Length: 229
Image (cartoon, rainbow, N blue to C red; front, side, top):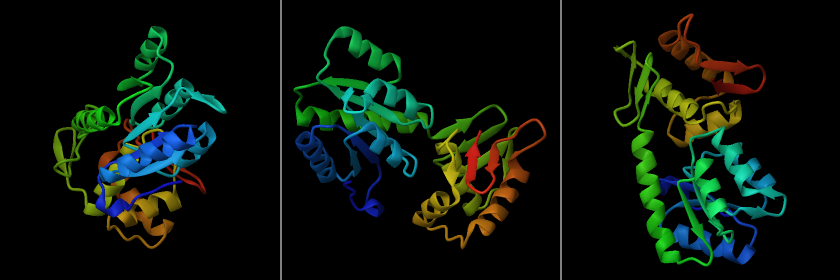
């Protein structure tokens, strides 16, 4: 596993490629561009990383030792709103179209130019950042750029701690965030909660502000953590 210093970086990228040399080359190039980079060589390793980290982009091959990149794309897309860039030797039209149909943002065939790859990545990330800057389901609206929330069009006075919790949960919609993962993630943002009991107090306060009998967002998985439904 390769990881750069996260506190100085903005975007986090997972590279899923079974060719060890190519994987290392891509990771090294990305780190030079100041991305936070994690790498995996199998679907199993990548799934393990995805359960404990938030990725802005996944660069993945299609042919993998223990599975299919298309299936991994579906798996991670069902759990987070991550961007996908396929990097594969499978250059048949049906493969490329399949990649786009299941949610890929780009499909690059091997051999490829590293310079072109590095140009494509910020385009994808900036495009997706604009899409994800606001959460709005018609009842609850959260503007992540302004750090503000509204319920039924009315301002919802959330505290900085509540806002960061909200951002983490929405960013992992449908994915279980364990107590330890959520606490560690908040700690990295400067939100220092001592334990899961203090976390629960803040989440209960947040739920009272944004939830009604008709609108339930946060589910507590007893003994494990929380899920944004």
